[in-house]
Amino acid sequence: MPKLSRYNHFHAWRDGYYLAFNARSGAVALLDSSNYSTYERLAGKIQTHATGPLTPEEEELLKQLRYGLFACDDDFSELDWLKFEHNRARFNESTLSLVIAPTMACNMACPYCYEGSKQGRMSGETMQAVIDFVKQRAGSLNGLNVDWFGGEPLLAMDIVERLSRSFIDLSETHKFEYTSTIVSNGYLLTPEIIDRLVALKCRAAQVTLDGPSRMHNRKRLLKNGKTSFDAIIRNLQSAVEKMNISIRVNVDKSFSVEVIQELVDELKQADLHKKVWVNFGMLEAATSVCSNIAEDCYGTADFSNVETEYFALLLKEGFRIQKLPAPTSVFCMAQQVGCFLIDPDGDLYRCFNHAGDKTKSAGHISAEIDFHHPEFNRLFRFDPFEDSDCRDCTILPICMGSCPARRAGRNGTPETTCDTWKYNLEPMLEIIALARQQAASAAAAAPQEKS
Image (cartoon, rainbow, N blue to C red; front, side, top):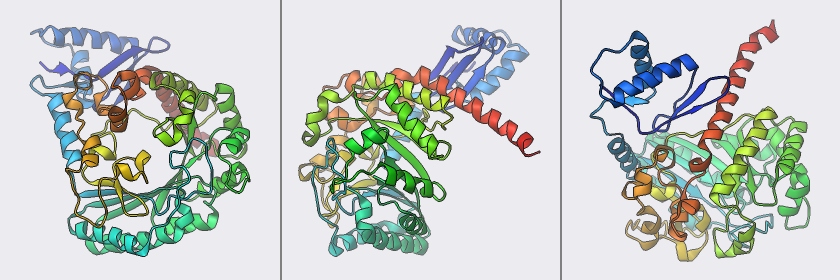
């Protein structure tokens, strides 16, 4: 007799239906009341180790449950499997992931930015050290992933181009896959720049809009005193034709449903609502530079509530929903030996929030990697399988212990360290189910519209 997965989540939905989700596979299923009754009978037999035969309906459902990993062999350890996959990802060096900040300078003066008023550009010597770093590993790579970061990386487009061309040449010579993305404030993401990025195999961009125009222009004022919202929207209207665009909205307590509605209306007016992904970021006082905003920031549990509310609004307004509870082997780059953030001086870091803070540097790009460096191990050493709360958690496969930097810098309670899925999995699954229903209905209606 098989056993039920420890990572199953079932809850009643609307009209007598039930939503089923398995965190290890990421499978989402919709059961009607008849199927759910069959599931309850089957689950009872499994849990009591009943020896009698299963009905045809139970046999068929069990087959489907196995397919979605809702059920597995009795002697199979899901926890051991997760731990193996976690360690394999942690120590995998066949894929190299680099976050490269060609400059820490920025054309904006956001009051909450942890980067402060940093300047500087990557020198030719440092660029060559980055190229050599990749070249030394190129022969054993299956893939190289680069995220361009800053500051505002487009202020150093020439550096992005030189490094990208070198990476592309190395990928062609050594037959590994090269991909890249960029994090930009969007002001310089003009049609001409978009074409140059696409030619350099940059396929996606994340752009921040901090609320509707009236709020964004106050929070993300250009250093020359000018506003930025309208120019960013114009750039996005061009960018969506050639790149995947996600919009990040940094949320603090000044936001409300009414504020998000304003932004939604402006995006719809710009005809972007079906062409971009919108996600909400929890604004955090991650460093001493931005500690002045701490009282305006949400805790994780409270943020999860407003996040759900905002995604429900996006769904109602016809936006696509990108946020999914997907299984992962690691939470972020800090848990992997093959991931590094490189600042303009060539210093290495383990977290986006630490870029440019020399006290958090874990070495230099021109030196041998020291995997025993205190700043490397400070974030790397956390193992979710050695933490009893994580090990016993039914959402471990989609979280893997959440943010190591939060754990290293806070008091270690679930309210400060856990991911938002801990608090809003059930309502978010409902939103995701509705989004999939809407997408299926739209796909079914499409041929009729053409006829």
